[in-house]
Image (cartoon, rainbow, N blue to C red):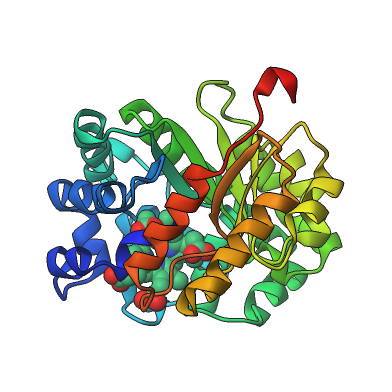
Length: 324
Ligand code: CP3
């Protein structure tokens, strides 16, 4: 459950009032926060406490994450000159704290730890827009009007993403998740031409069958086959794609992660139960399913509701695999 920790009182206590990037760079605190949802809910995996903007932050692109807003860039990416502000990531020098956090978790975390990175497109969109945007106008304009700069930017960001994920795996991450949160905001043809090759490059750099690759984006129903084709073992879907529709598009051989609507978790428990049962039913007991929310936990979510969701999923009985 992404950002499962943010609704917990124990998270707010340890987080303090500084920037989340500051907290993420303190391995002891980052490891403790990673463990909080595991301890509270008994979930089956932990997601590393960090952020998709950590690598570009660490090479000093000039980024902060404003609470309640998201990533903000002081001087957004505008022209070929800005390519000079980016360089290869040297994880041991730039983000040693990420490796240290995962090493602590290798000792202390009772469940697998999922490492992650932002996909080149979603990270690029923050660098270009300068702040969270629903239309991504500047990103789309750069992609169209400056194809060479776009390709160079996506190339550099792909390399940064690969280095970051390699470092996390070497430090002990058991699985990796590529977040392309805004992939659904562009036209499917443009996605295929201008975004897909880079996500594919990133995911195809990892081929250890023991380290599964999860690929997630919002609003990806029209491009679901490409999200899979980019090299995912698991496709993460949001709440707007019913799981049976995703299955129809993806077949039965790939795992699906999702997709309880986080907003439902703010409402009456009966509605939550109904929604959880429906997802389990629509999945028709397919074994390749990681039950999750369709997007991050909302800050006002009652922890008791999430605890109940975990309990419901854990008590759901699957048929014997051999007889299925
Ligand atoms: O789930 C976890 O707690 C694990 C760590 C994690 C964070 N961000 C910590 C965080 C993960 C996996 C992310 C991914 C992330 N960050 C994404 C991709 C996933 C998605 O949600 O689509 C994106 C787009 C970002 C960028 C970002 N960082 C946004 C949009 C925000 C929200 C700003 C806000 O306050 O509403 C952040 C801040 C952030 N990153 C928080 C957390 C727990 C919010 C809480 C806080 O500031 O303490």
